[in-house]
Image 1 (cartoon, one colour):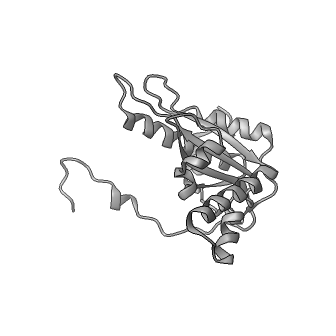
Image 2 (image 1 turned 30 degrees about the vertical axis):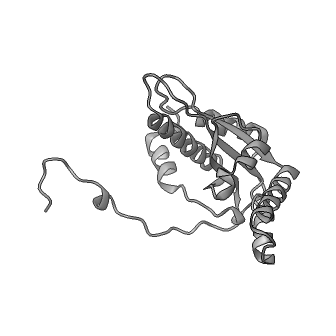
Length: 198
């Protein structure tokens, strides 16, 4: 076991991950080899029945702006003219982080494996991708929003029947040091069965 593989360094990785808002992510971004490493890590999750209920679509370069423009057009068609600030937010929603990994949930009915177990595997896969990005020196934000649930966005991205979007995973380099936020304590969420609370 190397120094970088030690349990201590792995725990450091797990306990230092921070979400950085997509607008705070910029260059340098992951190169294609980094993306492949991130996706490879995303595959190493519990997957009852080996169903692989997840897949990923990479959006980068000019396609990020094009996706934002497409989503803006859908929003305007649905809601009418938007306030200039809201329109700009929609147009640039995918423009900040250098890479967007779209996590696709392709859970399906199975005679032995309930969908809920498959959904848990999808969530674990996205979390592994976030941790892999962190291990490579990047940060990631897991976002959804209305576009993740819109059938026209699904069709635009080439989703197949029955597939949905679990996450738009924005990946890049934090432009400022992440700030720690208040978190619940272990004592707030851990109980020992059969032990009387103090």
